[in-house]
Length: 233
Image 1 (cartoon, one colour):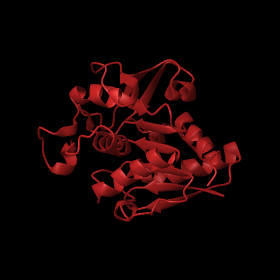
Image 2 (cartoon, rainbow, N blue to C red):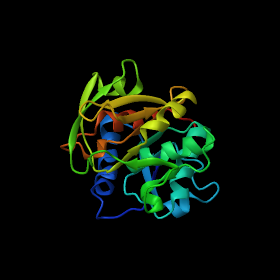
Image 3 (cartoon, rainbow, N blue to C red):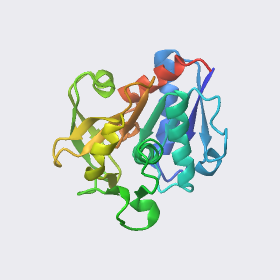
C-alpha cells in the first residue's frame, strides 16, 4: 500500500481538509490504487525524518500554518528526495518559499502573511485582488505537466486565497529551474501554477483542485495519485 502524507493543520473549519481524504478515496476506486492517507501536522513535519517513507506529499491549504518550518520541510523533502508533490493554495506559497531559500539562495525570503505584514524581503505577497471564494480562467503552457493533466490549454478553477508570488521575484526562481506554467487570464497574467520539469511529479497550484464542483476527483488529484503509485518506496 502506498501512503500519502497530507501535511497541514487539519481543521473541520477548512473545507479543503474535509474534501481531500474523500476525493483520494474516490481516486483509489477510479484508478484501482492501493492508497492510504495520513495527516502530518506542520510542527511534526518540521522534525527530521518525519516524512520519510511516504509515496507522496500533499502540502494542503490552511495557512498560516502552525509551523512555517513544517511547510518548508515538506516541500524540501519532496523536491530533494524525488517524492511526488502536490501543493495547493498555501502549499503553493510554501513550495515557492522553500525553493527561493534553498535553491535560489534568498535565505531571508518571507511570506507576508506569516510575518504579520509587508516587508522588503517578501516573496509571497497580497494578491492585487483577493481570490478568496472566486473562480477564474487560467492559461496553461503547451506541453507542461498541468496542461497534460487538464487536457486543454485553458481551465477555470476555484480559489480561496489572498496571497501569491511577488512578480519581481519570478525571474530569479525561473532562472534556477522553476517553471511557471499557468497564468491568470484576467489579472495581468499573474502566476497560478508552478512545476519542476526534472522531477517525477512536482506541481504547485495557487488554485484548489480539491474545491472543484462535484465529487469527481480533479485531473490534478488523479495525476498526483497515479504518480505516487509509480514510486518505489
